[in-house]
Length: 304
Image 1: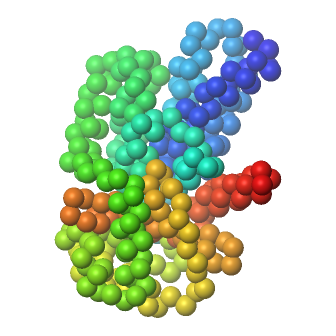
Image 2 (image 1 turned 30 degrees about the vertical axis):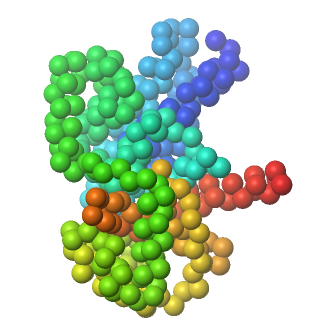
C-alpha cells in the first residue's frame, strides 16, 4: 500500500484509536501522542502482510497504552492529592468525536476514575470487550493471552467495578439544572439550599496536583461537602467568570480568569441528588481542554 493510501486508511480509524487510548490512560494529551506513535509504527510496517487493519492498529495502540500505564503507575501513586482524568470537550460544536459514545457512562470522569482501580491488563480487556465490542478471542491475540484467560480477566474487572458503577442516568437538562443551582447556592452562601441539593453520602473531589491551593483529600458527607464549597466561594478573591460546556459527555462549568481556563466543575447524580462533585484545577490537566476551546473559537470566528 502506498504511503498516501496508508494515511487515508489510518485516518478512518483515528477516532477509534484515540477513544481507546483516552479511556486507557485518562489523559487526552497522552492519548494523542499514542495515536501518533501508532501511525508511525504503521507507516514503518509491511502493510501488505496486514490481514485486518482495524485489529492491527488496535493491537498497537493497546500495547502502547499498557506500556504507558506501567510507566505512569509510580507517578500516579506519588501524585499530590486526588488524581482525576483530563477533561475532554465532547459537544457537537467542537468536541473530539469519540467511538463508544453510545455508552455515555464509559466516558464520564466518574467512570474513568473508577478504572484506576483496575490493573492495566484488566483495564484493557474490560474496555475492549465491554465498550468497544471486541470478542475475547480477538483480544487474546492482541494481548498474547488465551481466550479463557481473557474471560477470567474480564469477569474479574467487571466484578471489581459493578458495585461502584452508576446505575442512575439523569437527563442532561436535569444535570445542567442541578449544576447551576449548586453554583448559585455556593456563591450565595445558602447552606440550606446547598444541602438540599446534595445526597447524604455526597463526595467532593479536587484535583490540583499541588499546583494551586485546594483540598488534597476528598470531602465526604452532605454537611461537610456543603461547608467546604461555601468556604471555597467565600474565600475566593479571583475575578472568575463562568461558562457552560459539555465535558466528558455531561454538562460542566468552566471557570475563567483573564481569558485562561482556571478550573472545571462537573457532577454525578443519584436518585436523591448530587452524588459526586469533580473540580479539576491542575493547569497541566486543563491544557488540552484549553486547546480544544481555543480551536472552537478560531473555527467559529472563521465561519462567521
